[in-house]
Length: 380
Image 1 (cartoon, rainbow, N blue to C red):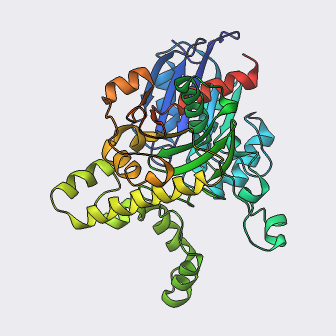
Image 2 (image 1 turned 180 degrees about the vertical axis):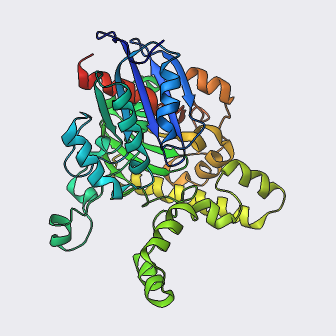
Image 3 (image 1 turned 180 degrees about the horizontal axis):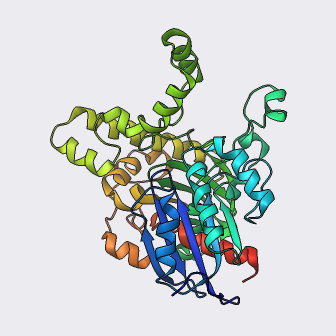
């Protein structure tokens, strides 16, 4: 089926494009939210994206709209929005705030707009979920000039994942979203935690960029800023060296020296690998610190919710995090659902009933959320 044929305008299909630093996920959703087809591109985003997308479009019903995941909205875009020339220019200007994510997403946006010029394209931002962070949560303790002139502030990320997980959590607990106080934890290639009070994000671990906060797969997470100054002054590391190392060679990979994948590290630890054991211990401590700091922004803790690839598929990590959070009323001894069942059902409550704060796992739903937000923007 040709990609350039006329599309069905009312209640039609939504194409979702989720580009990362080394991956491109393509999915098509019907008007009722059902996933019609999906594909993980064989090549990283770049010149090949147009070919991959054209091939996909030739095999599926023509979309009525396209939703693009864009990690960072920058200071001028505060909601999911239709992509026009002005918005496209703003996206290019903010790319350096999330170079691993926005930079590779832009060629995909351009390829899709060229292939589907008569279809509306919507930018869906991870930062929008956190747009109403209280002043004390979004403000860095730096001079006013840095904040006003340079725009230095906390934005927060993983918002599309958190939006999806929050709705599923409310359904699972049988309570309205605006009556929940929960900590959401997205653990994947990037990792963060978020405090939600009455349906709104009130604190989060990521900041101006997706580099702050928890230890991640290949990203360092938070470091003493004085350490970076010392590395520059004492050891002559350049800005480019720091950027590359902190984004691509740190985190679990930097600690273990072998892998940024928790599945590999759990196996290696069982075989006596001390570096893998240290990597996992450092990671889970970082997660506990993040969860505890988020709980400090709540009056009570109605649930702890895991999502993301590690969150949904690594029971050892979940257990090691929760078993050491008794100070928050969270207990270990978690149930271990079959991944196939979790993916089919979408969520599972995994705590032992009556033993403490509810603990849930929600299957990652960023692409579904992008489709839903795209429809909302366009009034579909």
